[in-house]
Length: 285
Image (cartoon, rainbow, N blue to C red; front, side, top):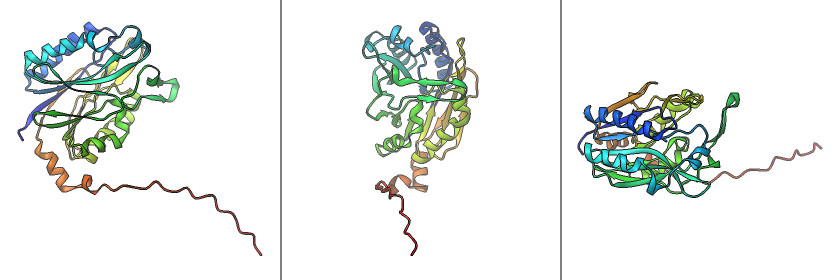
């Protein structure tokens, strides 16, 4: 397989789709000028709402979403593959899907993936999120064909569920995308170690574009978009500022890593442990 250059764009989306599209276009052009053939964007890259209800009140269904034709035209004009990290896609009066898209150089949608695991957490100091109030979870893992190998698609909080990544690797994934808008709190604690772990346990390259920056309403996302090789080495880290990272990807390193540690072939079905009742004390004679 031939090598190729992948870029992860790191933006700081606000609740203004037109502004965010113009900003992303500028960053995508910069990445392509640097040699990228495949560009990956973060989760909710075209609009990050102050409240999740905004995705319902001001959102779009798939046929009317302005980002899809906009990015399709960019793919055609720049001759690139593009991962739209995710868009909020209305699927009814009360719910959206958090949906990732893979577009080819002709602007065609080659694959979509609806985020399966939803971010319902309560952190310290009153920081809480309940994604399931407005987002309907996906139900199926997805793998897409790229010219250089297969891409397993995930989104953000999926990162914490290793069984999904094992499933993608067994389905033939060579690369895994993890677009995110990770919080600054959880990002500082867990982002690097989890992204590296997903690469190590699958023997895949991981492309993890993450949003950065603080919003006018106070929300702060972590940044540090990463490109990680199949051995778990971070080969590019975007830091905390707007921009992009780019790296040369060698698909042969996937088989090389899996050849050294063939963990995927060593998987075994494990029976759930039986819970033994609490022992009853035997009275003394």
